[in-house]
Each structure stands twice: as C-alpha cells, then as structure tokens.
Image (cartoon, rainbow over all chains, first blue to last red; front, top):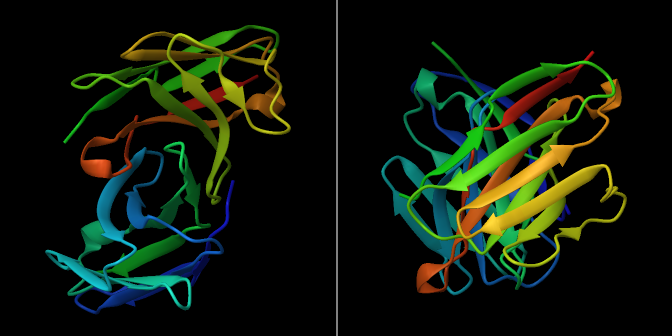
Amino acid sequence: SQQGEEDPQALSIQEGENATMNCSYKTSINNLQWYRQNSGRGLVHLILIRSNEREKHSGRLRVTLDTSKKSSSLLITASRAADTASYFCATDLSNYQLIWGAGTKLIIKP
Amino acid sequence: GAVVSQHPSRVICKSGTSVKIECRSLDFQATTMFWYRQFPKQSLMLMATSNEGSKATYEQGVEKDKFLINHASLTLSTLTVTSAHPEDSSFYICSAPETGLAKNIQYFGAGTRLSVL
C-alpha cells in the first residue's frame, strides 16, 4: 500500500540543528499527513496539510506541500534528542485508508 | 486527541498456537479500523481493513483464514493469528480513523510484538 518515497532514509544530526525530511507521492491527494513513530511503538499524528495549502506550522514543525511536484517536506527546527524517531508521510484514499511513505529514521545526537 | 488501546503489547507463543490481539477505540466510535504489519526498519504494510458489522477487506497476499479479523462493536476489533509459525513473528499495529471535519487522521495502538518460537 506504499506509494510514497521518503528521503533521506536515515538522517543523523546534532542536537540544535534543523532536520528536513522529504516525501513524494504519485496520485492526487486530499491531504497529506506526517506521523512519528518511536522505536517499537505505534504512530502518532503530527500534522496534516490540505491539498490547497502550501505551508503549515505547528510548534517546531513546518510542513510544505507542492502539489505540482507531488512532494512535501517536514522541517523540525532546533532539534532535541527526544525528536529521535522515524517519521512517515501518508496520503489518503477515499475509504479512510492511508498510503504510507517508506519513512525517515531521524537520530539526534546529544 | 482520540485514544486507541492495543493489547497485548508483547506475546511469545509456541508454533501452532493462535494469538488474539485486541484493538479498542476508547473515546470515539470506529466503524473502520486498520491492521498493519511492520517489519524491522520498514514502513507499515496494510493487512486488512476491519469493518464493523461486516467482513474485513484483506489486502492482496494476506491470507484471511490465517489472520482472522472480527469487528464486533463500534469500539473493538480483534486480529487472531491462527496456527502461528515463526514467519508470523512481527510487529502488528492497529489504527482507527477519526473522520470529523472531513479529515482522516489515524489514531494508532501501541503495537503488539509477536514472537513465535
């Protein structure tokens, strides 16, 4: 059920730096979401951006959406060790099903 | 936000036994729930869509007789791995969508780590 590609697959940065993850998708969307997964846990919804929006902010998170390029990016500013997790983008089908990207594993080094 | 409870969090069983995993929406009704399987360092693989009051919809390649899904109420879906074998060992996660305001935000259980010996 994957249609999204995410890059990088893994990202390791120093605490305090900004982390940027990218997601590309293949079909038209209603919205795009980003989720976070701590190791061995379920996923947690972070932010949703609608197809008619170009940018959205939530705390230290900034999401952009370019529907012409079928791509989105997630920026985490001033990263913290607690941000270490895997991040997934997801786009929706009409039956509430989500199509998931491959994920980016983010490691924040203290 | 909405809460989904998944139980058990971890189970170790012998080959040939059956294992039941429960997924409950605690503060909202979920006519639809999703069951995923996740292999190490990989994304979520949708196994099936659980529909309250009707049969589950299975993804291609997922054996419905192997992975039994029952969605008996608006707050509970169960996944039973029948006659489990070591290759069934994996991380299983459920989710339920909250579809208010025309959004489709998924709320996830904490996952179940299944180890079949």
